[in-house]
Image 1 (cartoon, one colour):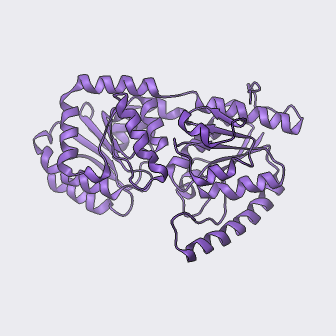
Image 2 (cartoon, rainbow, N blue to C red):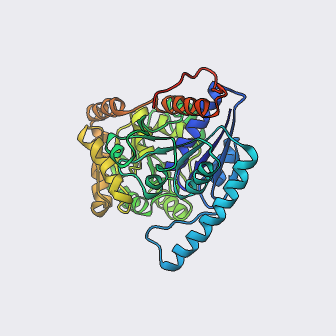
Image 3 (cartoon, rainbow, N blue to C red):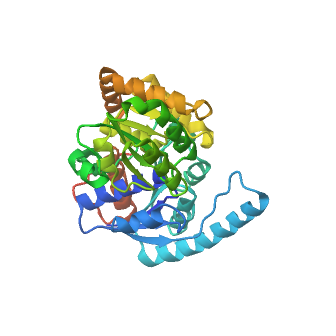
Length: 380
């Protein structure tokens, strides 16, 4: 089976695609998975590192841009559509999967023009415009939340959950201590703001350090900053003499989750799915400019279940953040309740459901009985 997975720009759109690629190859080691993405997105450095081929196409955001940037976006889309058509026509995949982001639009549209079956994955409770548009041209839409089902054609939509990489579930805390130079048995706070970092979280965390001085010998940090704030944040931790590691990007997220006692992060759908799958208590700080305010909706849902604490970006200060970190540090019983609630909400079978749907669509469309080994035809 040959599969093209198109999407990226951010980890929230890329990692569900990588989870799906892992599942396809787990079922059939002879399958071929090829990615399509942008040279400017996170996929440019992560996909080759994961051992997959990637084809780059031009892409540029459209919503919220100036008229000139919108014109450039249209030109990029046309170029991307032509390249996608040429590429898909050459390799003739059995199916094309859009994992989200603007970069998925041209490949999925090219698949439709070539009569190649396609599927899109929607991670958020409020779908973006790209996926709403693409739902008219695909065979199936796989959604994470029931709230998003109403935005798509009822005959195509499947409630599957958001794919999580299987290895995220099996991270090793001892390996994490070696990789990140952390001390075993010390309360560890994992801080990250998405694949590119989040300056608001970085600044608040730096400010919070002064309020946690008395815990300095009992707490350590693993902080992903993004490239822009790396030096500034690293200097702050050093000046206060805290234990831990500051890094621009964490490639070994399974180990990072494994060693974490508490997560401080944004509340994108993929982050939420991973936190719930591994059962980590979290302080969630929604990105305030997310489409449809879906990050706040994600965080609110977990907070209502008792699985997380939410701090709005407008209310985020170092003092407030330090108070929540201290409270959760001092309350292992509360952390355990949050862990149980998070795991109860998590879905670990999403990737299997999506792979089943893909196989059924591909086999029916081609009439070849072409299925990934071990798959049974899924309904829809």
